[in-house]
Image 1 (tube, rainbow, N blue to C red):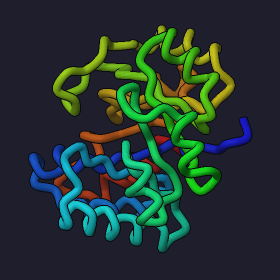
Image 2: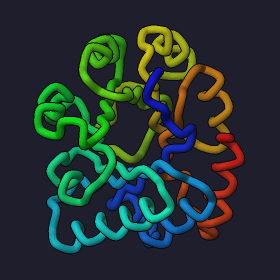
Image 3: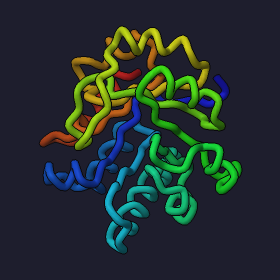
Image 4: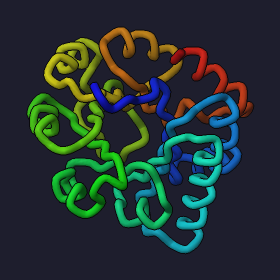
Length: 208
């Protein structure tokens, strides 16, 4: 595996954070303060000026400490912000097209949800693949079928690319998912807490 992934991969989902009343910039500061060096910003709505400025500010926080900043779905936004990577799903531009657009300016992550998609993703010029949801998740309106830990362990053998587990990943489940072969844990809901720095430090301890 030439591309290295941090074991802790927090995703700042703008809709989820707004519903929880959490400040994305405060959370970003807490995460990098605890040592997180791989952070994704996920914004599924239209990119208004406010959304763009928020994405820019989060990127500055992450990159100021030498971290890698990833934008979900939008390679154009990622390039404009000087982000390090872009993460796309099955309904977005495929990695082959993104590579023609971005060249080597961005690393590419690609979401998969089953064996067929994982095998296809392995042939794409993506730097890492994500698989999920490993558990039930509330971060998507129409989630794909749950993969489960046993299936994750089986699917891990089908690709040499770094593999990110996503979907319902909590502190209590982290050890089992890592033991199943995941290189990295994408965490959305469970990074939100009343004490953001303490929660971020806890996640860093769990993924050392």
